Length: 246
Ligand code: 13P
Image (tube, rainbow, N blue to C red):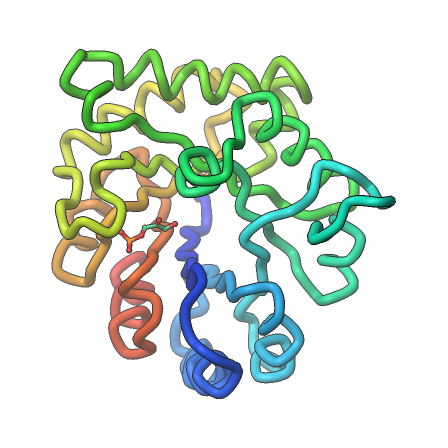
């Protein structure tokens, strides 16, 4: 059985004190939730503080972004090796906010994915359609092409070793969560695209996940956990969501 994974993407929220307090609360409670893997994605500058707060717990640490380059004159960028040094095990790749607001395309995303695996980080590849694409009936085509771009770059086996998060853009930060049926339909198509090799690949749903919506989402056969934004900033609510993935 695939161990469920619940990830908290803190985005560009909070200060050091809040990051430390949130991580400490998760670390104090992880023991009761060992059937689920928990990982948090603080801003880069809070990584070391959060790492300290998570010490002696099994809550994993991840970064929200990674450079596709190994090192060099790339002002403002952070390499995979630097993230490993900070204690990261996971990294988000291709989040829709990076694609939409910072011009990342399928090619950049695939290069970042490759850079992550090269240093031993587990990429969480984020994919998802816009509202317009959904209305035009393109959801499955868009998601499949986002995944194909990465398969073309690193191969199917490497993609199946990672985590894929389906995050419909229209559900992110809007309070409008995909229905369990809508999410399952896309997850099932992703599973099919990965073939036999992807039978155990963890597929997460993200987009306005709350404890109230998590039960039904996590009950879907191809949903193996969640990528949580806003609701991951509150320890009690995030822990409730983690509990529901058990
Ligand atoms: P929300 O849970 O705030 O909608 O954010 C989802 C997300 O983007 C996680 O990566």
